[in-house]
Image (spheres, rainbow, N blue to C red):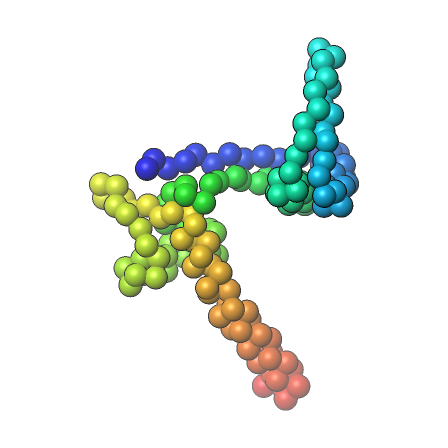
Length: 149
């Protein structure tokens, strides 16, 4: 399976407030009829199911608060460098997780490729650990401040 090239999207700063309002409106709707008016004046009405509204609302939310959003399918393959960015760890740590079997991968010649779904699953499994470590670090800092260590 070839690596899917990421599709990046962004909203100009001036359009971000309307993107946020659109996300709010989509979340409030159980179903929506969208009325499209094209540049040439032709009109079309589309009915969107609730599951699509939720996905579009999430997408608009992210667009209205981020500089860019990248869209990839779960079955897309990413490089270890991409996985490192998604997981918030270094590339050597990604390779170590691959070597011990925590992160399935396939080889393409001398290169490794990882399914995005597997990267996201690993992130979900490791998130409670990361939160516990951060809480422990915060507690340690509090103790250091309290006792002047």
